[in-house]
Length: 357
Image (tube, rainbow, N blue to C red):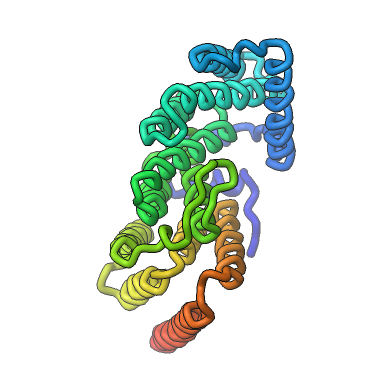
């Protein structure tokens, strides 16, 4: 496959009437994603150092929830100023991320101490706080982390209500809403794309938390018997089927493929079958949905996340001791049979259309 240069892409767009004028100058100030990833890791360490400093020199802060929240909001405000500075550079971004992470920790600690760590209201307020940071902080990495934290907090609030399978389904619906409208909302891409990445990460994390039976950073474990309920799992599977069908229909419509064509019927049947086979393993449908959205949008990062999510979930699922070998065998059998059927159907229809042409 030939890789087009930016000048050739601009010429193709101009020929199609989508752009006009001279091609813009290529940006040379963009930081590579590897460097930004390292800056994110450095921001976590910076937040840890800030918290250690506060703990050593301001011990009285930890005795009052109100002081914790006030000090945390002050740090988040300074971080917001850093992100909106005219002289913004990598150092300023790293400083803003460190201050914001430390401030978020203080605010969340104060909220949990004030409202109670087992209260639904606490995590709903945390979710609203993180959602506000998504809108305020003008940085893609920060918005991704805040969207992830908001989704996790809201999911945990639902877990406390006994809704174990609903959060992953709701996150899947959010993924479809964001990524199937990416081109329609291109003017707000700087805000919506990080939200989409955060929702994808949260969906993967929630599925693994249900499979593992516990969270990494929250105190209350999920009982394995409590994590699976027949009625709720059936409802969640049906909702996943509907979400997958909606995603497939929107992608087909965007690509200009008629709903009654052979390819449309194959795609809709495949999405429905994959969702149905994830009755005892919802992470399969969510991972495949992320992979589908990434492939349809030409987003390698999202598609790669879907592949990693599928590989991690399948390997973890197979070695979970609370699931019987019969359940594992049935899931593997159904998945293999589905893939073989899809392969046969695609080769038959595609080969037939090609010979007919």
